[in-house]
Length: 189
Image (cartoon, rainbow, N blue to C red):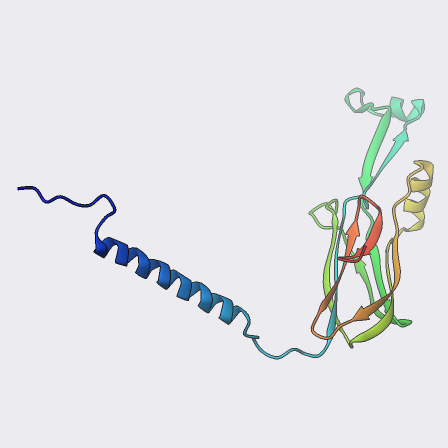
């Protein structure tokens, strides 16, 4: 005679599901509790993080060749207009209460130096209210300046001047928004 099972399942199956749910709850509670435990002690210092990335630092400089220049070239190289993409280095400067804490040159990446400029730097500072100035501007020599002027191209410079509150064991993040052309403090409208 076949054994008939009830449609709701057996008591053992129900008990097994209850144990799985209870075990999962215990694991989740342990993760929440352990997530609140601080790891190590804070340094008591504030951090300023500069996370800048720009593609607008490249400029295309085009020049038109004269007829004499074109005649001097082989037939297959005669292009009336020649364009060159330049990506000069930029200078990053950070002042806190009038004291310069960073002054460095940032070179474009890539084998040919034509990749976006990227800065990812952290600076440890004492906490408190500070007047902060961040400047990120192109380093242009005389020849490049003349080429940019002839091509009517201007490379962007960025400046952020703001009074900030540096908080111990917290990070103040400065980013570069290419869309607005401005340096911004993350999370501050």
